[in-house]
Image 1 (cartoon, helix red, strand yellow):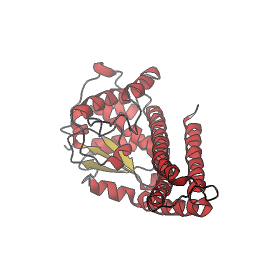
Image 2 (cartoon, one colour; image 1 turned 90 degrees about the horizontal axis):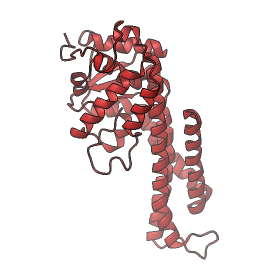
Image 3 (spheres, one colour; image 1 turned 30 degrees about the vertical axis):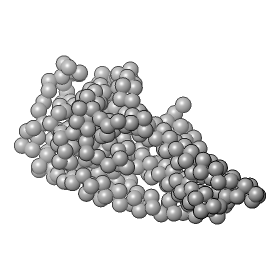
Image 4 (tube, one colour; image 1 turned 135 degrees about the vertical axis):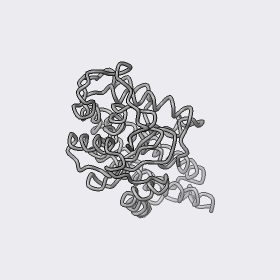
Length: 309
């Protein structure tokens, strides 16, 4: 089943959940109210997400003069992806990670942590950046915003149902009434269902970004190597990240915390790596690998501590 089909199916499931919950609780008016409110909240988040998240993590924009090799890799990959070259930011954080944001390819931003640049060699950094540019190319930020809007509408309806139950509403004698116990049960189960669908959408888009990024590189091994390192270091040194932004990162920044895997927006790293290893092409990207026919542990490890030179 293709990723786009699965994403469409999941978004349709979320929409059906809104219709069901809205019809059970507030009827058509309640459903419309919740949807409009959630849409307004998420439109604001979608339009200003880059500014919000960059400020949250104290990210600093870097110029080509400061990091020429980093800019060179991003420019090459953007050309391969057929998108404008995004702005590049560095996050003052030792835990290795990266994310992309921006409402469309023309306003895209990619951000990497200092820890990632210190840990990765040139090809692995290229693998991470290719994954992030794939999110930009595939408009996953828009898809995530739509999913968040639908999930937000469900949660607003559920909150309204909970307050109605607490205030004594929801009589079973009313036509189509759920009763107090029914309202309470729905207010608990509906948000959980919405969250599970939203996480499934996010996981599906991660697989798609892995595949697209590997195509830009011509080599799925670089990204697989990077994910192995990221997973190992993320468990030992989880990032000080906000839970509501965890889905943006290439690996879950909260993976060192309890229950992180239970409600993870990311597929298991082992599965992502296995898919990449199985689809490896063995053809390194010309501008990224500089013509060297080497891979995995055989590749010469270039240091990125001298990147600013």
